[in-house]
Length: 352
Image 1 (tube, rainbow, N blue to C red):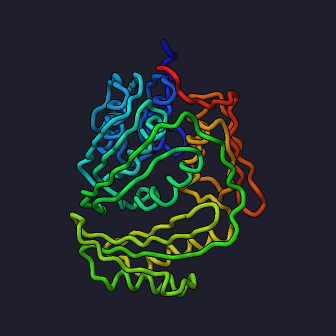
Image 2 (image 1 turned 120 degrees about the vertical axis):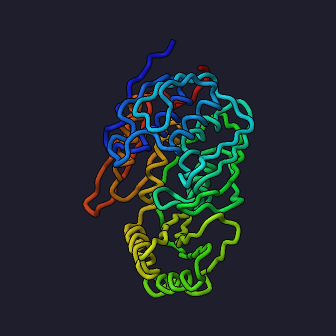
Image 3 (image 1 turned 90 degrees about the vertical axis):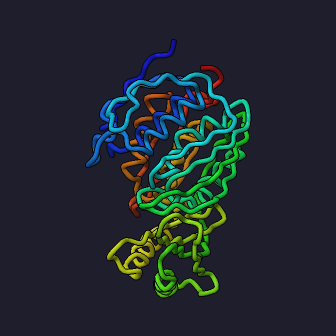
């Protein structure tokens, strides 16, 4: 019987990332846990639908025993069983982020004994989470470089607040991950897409004009896309910054009573900061690299000043694995993050 770990859900940034990381590590290591103070740092604490969907997904892939998993609950106890692959379908029922739900189960399914196909429905382009494009073009290519065989395809956009998006992820099992170093970026090529659904196309064109003017991106690298399959209206500006190492996606989301030029200028400012830093790993990717690197037995990357999400993830990791996560801050505002595990096999799970 493995030790029941007690996790403080109010630590660090005090949001849903603690729950998702805890679920992912519980599935991989087989450690049961109790988490208290779920999302205590948020204006509406406790489990929302997208967090509850992540719990249900994690329980479904492992046959877990769960108590306290109710809407609005601030406490959850989770005892995982052996992880199995196969077909999995989960619908959030709101515009809650489906990409964040995937975070909770992807590491374990990559280590499962059989292949998986995961169908997720909910928000795919949500201002409070990485969009599907980040998953498909930024995170999954890095996972594949570490040895994971995983692909995703978007079938229907789901903008906030209507949601209703849908994507499918195919996952092949891998015996182990390989460590990865992302330290040097090099030259970049910048392009952008502006998506509109139920919104005049003039909005996307005004956003792209700002990208052209502020980032100097040529018009042939800019694309306006009218989305006709989304259940609700929405707008997203996706700035892709491609280098030899990876493609970083910076996103701006349209808001009511906020002009297209303002939305685009905010995204351009974030893109400019990333480009000027000369680091390969952006702030949002840094959040999501720690767990795969622990599975690989180590890794290192250069990024901007780490977010509260990243620092909180590191603290949670240390409760599940014998791991050292070091942050070395440089005088230019960048940071080198190194993940070291005491065991060469990381926390790859061999038995429940």
